[in-house]
Amino acid sequence: MMKQIIINLPVKDLQKSVAFYKAIGFEPQYADESTTRLLWSEHISLMIMQLDKFANFATKPIADTSSTMAGYFSLTVESIEEMNDLMTKGLEAGGTESSEKSDYGFMQQRTLEDLDGHTWNLMYIDLAKMPTAG
Image (cartoon, rainbow, N blue to C red; front, side):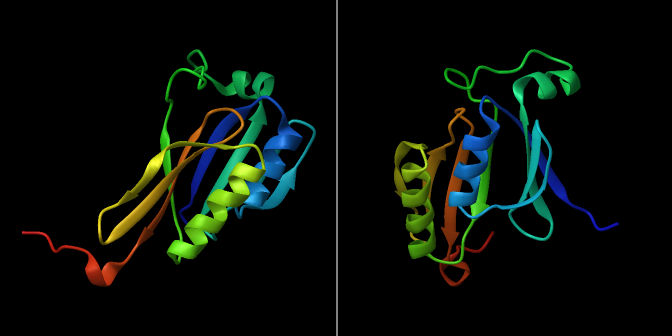
C-alpha cells in the first residue's frame, strides 16, 4: 500500500460540508450516512465525519473551532489564478476568509475556513523564486 495522508475532521452537517469541499476541488470517493472520504490528490485525502461518529474515535474533547484553532492545513495549487478561484468558490460555498492574502514574493497564500471553522491555507509557491537555504 502506498503511503498517504488522510486528514480526519468532525463536521456538523455532512452534506453541506461535502458541497463545500467539492467546491474547492476535493473529489468524493466513499460515503455512508455519517462519513465521506474526499480526495485532494492521489496521496492526500480528507475524511469528514458527523460529530457523533467522530466522537467515537476521539480520545480527547473535540475542539470548538469557532473559537479555537485545532489545526492549520495547507493545500498547494498550480497558480495564483487557481488559488483565487478556489477561494472564491469556497466563499460562495459558505466558507470565510479569516485573514488577508499574504505575498512573500515566491509564495502567495490565502486562508479559508470551512463551515465548521477548520482552517485551510491555499498556497501557490513559485519554486523558481524560492530563496535557497544557507
